[in-house]
Structure formats: C-alpha cells, structure tokens
Length: 194
Image 1: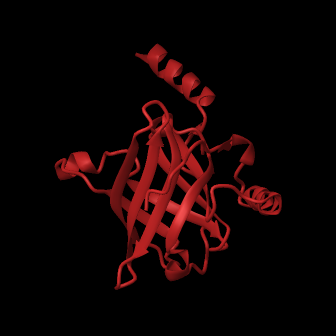
Image 2: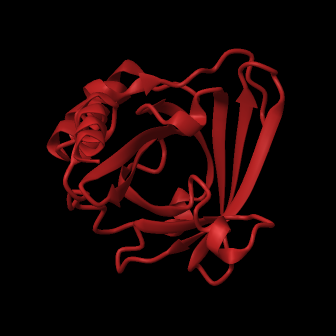
C-alpha cells in the first residue's frame, strides 16, 4: 500500500498542475463588475486539463441574471477528432464579497451527489480582468496530500495582441502564477456557437 502511495505522489509531481499540499491562497480582484464581465469570451491559453484533450474552439457566454447574483453560462467546444460541436450549460453564482469568485454548477440529469462530481463543477476565481481584452481564471481542487490547479486565459477575441500578451504575462508573474505552464488553445476552423 505504501509503495502505491509513494508512486502516486511521485507521479503527481510530473503531471502538469499538480503539487503537494493544499490549494494555495490566491488574491482575486477586489472590485469586480459582473455586468461589465458579461458576454462572449474565448479560451486563448490554458494549462493542461485531461477533460479538454480533444476540445478546440472553446468559447464561453456569460449572461448575468436580472438579480445580479449569478450568470447563466454556456460553454461551446468542437471535438478535434470528430469535428462535432458540444454545448454545455450551467449556473455560476457570485459567492465572494468582491463577486470575483464563481461557484459553477453544470446542468445535469444526474442525481445531486453525482452532478456535483462532474468535471468543471466547482469554484472559479477571477484573478484579473480588464473586461475588454483578457481575463485570468483559476481553479484549484485539493485531494488530501496534493492539489491540482487549472489556469485559463480568456479573451474577447480568439487571440491576444503582442502587447496584451506581454501585459498578461507580467501580471501572471505578479500573481505568482507561472505562465510557462500555459499552452495555446486550438482554434482551427472555428465557428461561433452563440
């Protein structure tokens, strides 16, 4: 049993996004404007995430509910192998005082316990957004002895200008997030989902 645990711990060090210990505390935006954030966003860069291995052309549409406490979220992707589109929906509730933490719950026909275990369900931290060019989105899950985190760079366009990318990478370093972990999102032959 102990050999298996040591093997898993060793393996986790080599898998992108996994580290020993609990999720680190990160600062989110102090003043977040939910209305300004609303609308279409595209995945520009991300860290490796097993559930998105075959996904490309990922886009998000955030629609703020009239009471201003949650978003209706639609996520569109294209399967890189089959070319088929997939659209997922869910609700993201604004849960922090600054409203920059989203508790996302994917829509599912599974019973409550199982639907909460669906990948993508959980807390998402808006580390920074300028509302017009890019957003830094971070999520982390603790698994006892280790944690895994995922970073997404979202843009209002499918790519960022060189100036925006330089600003963004400097900001990532300031937030103690290593941009070397990021990979470019796949955007071949993309169509609009929304």
